[in-house]
Image (cartoon, rainbow, N blue to C red; front, side, top):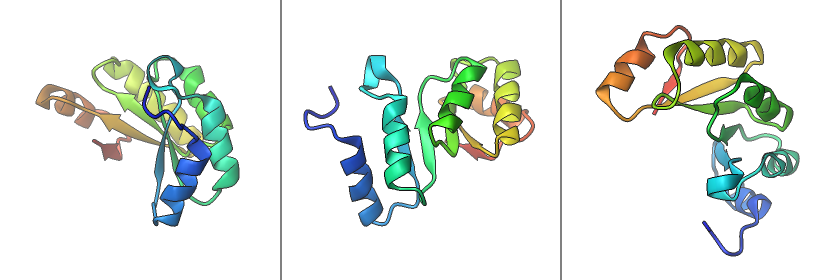
Length: 123
């Protein structure tokens, strides 16, 4: 449980009022109380701030679901994806005019990610 009084739209409003230039929205239900309904609700309430869909992206369809629910960007985790999958996800995201933030934890992961085409954000 991340927060007992969890209201993602209210949290989003607070971030927007504080001047956030973008927001990360958890959509993983199992571990983080998230959901694509939260992403969609925040997008409807706050249409002008870019939203990052923060989930364990393992399958291409998840990128489409993220976009359909208002995401401007998705998180890709290098530790859980093969290079060929990350490259494919980057291609899909670009076709949908989305950005990928690729999360790395080691120098080896950084080297892998830097060898891919189309990488714009690494964190």
